[in-house]
Image: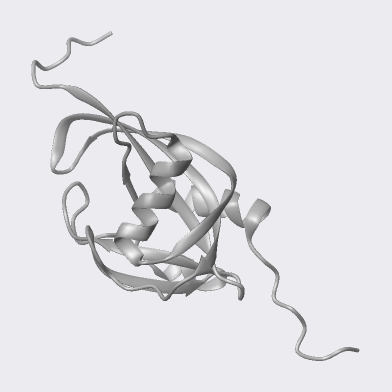
Length: 151
């Protein structure tokens, strides 16, 4: 194992792939490092004594104003030495979720919010792991649009 820098730390964070009833996914533009200014999933650091799911619910509410329901665990991602955080190892636990109530607005650590149709995600510049996690959630959690009329 390589030697650790003296300032190195491990941070546990949560993220949520939030789906609306039409099968769109919610993205936030990060207001702070790491990855400041980039599109990402809503989420953030787990506070001491907080469960992972409670942290996900809180972070989504703080960043977007939405109340969500957790649908299930998607994956755990390691992010080591990100731009703006070279001596930090993030362990990110990502959940699939659906909107229960509210209107998405940028707040807290989010500079902007964006609902994106799943088919249009390839056009959004995202970290490769974010694309991968959204894809996993789409397989498990994305609602299918109801038909506009019966055949």
